[in-house]
Image (cartoon, rainbow, N blue to C red):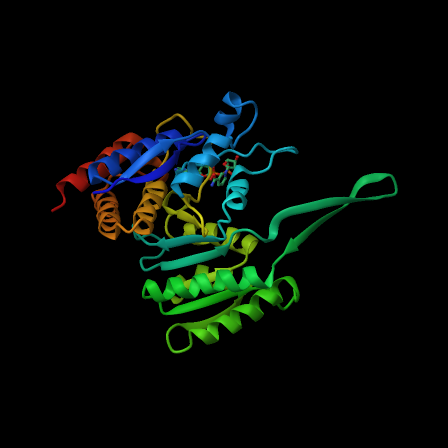
Length: 341
Ligand code: NAD
């Protein structure tokens, strides 16, 4: 098999532990990736003159156009821009794909949906300022959001194309155009226009974000592909992760014309870092998305089957009531891959 160059970022907190578990599974699969390991995050800052996203890491992704990334810590406080946001901007990673599927039946047994989040604009751009009033320099906080017509059209088209290529039946646009008539209204207007091009192939539906959140909690099986703007997508994708057992089960893909970066939705979990308690399933599923993206759907299916078999056999990390360590879980998935016909 021809090796596929890819950049590997272990990340902060639980990142190195869960990445080791993923590498054990990819090794068992004989996955075709030729990884170049590069630094990013808090650990990189300490070794690279204060820069959490060193040029050598950007250069590697520019070359490989493919990365598997552990979570990165963004220090709270002024002066730090999220490395994740910088990566999205640097490579124009405009589509954030977050599939959400029941693996271990819990509150729901039949969730199988995908959140497609616009990744570069909206209220998430973090353009903020203060307005001073009567001697208080921080009397009023202001945030500005941007949605361009082109970006709205591009992300909705991505969602419809994804539905077509993955045999999905319905795309639901999630918005707040009743209140944010400009910012969200433009998104809805473009979604309606794009939907016409797919009429007869993919059904189109609209939901206001607040009603959608309630309906997702009551009856998630009614949803298929959801497409929404950046901040709503950020919130909804954690909500849907909760429907299938929590952040430990939520993978994400950041896709752009020049590169794709695969990661878990969760963060660096500093509260459990270094203790072998982290659930590696989300990053394992992200590696599965990366195999799909790299044109290896058979390997992706084998990986997902092994994760399902391992969980079905009762092996799990403490967040899901199990006793396995992160490394033991990774080894169990690797063993399931080797056992499978
Ligand atoms: P978090 O997702 O790291 O943790 C939230 C809670 O979920 C914690 O109790 C944690 O222990 C638990 N958790 C998360 N992942 C888990 C896993 N795989 N297994 C078991 N339990 C898990 O969110 P946070 O605490 O708000 O953020 C910590 C840091 O991560 C922050 O610096 C934040 O900026 C960063 N972050 C990074 C990314 C990313 O790199 N994509 C995403 C979100 C947050």
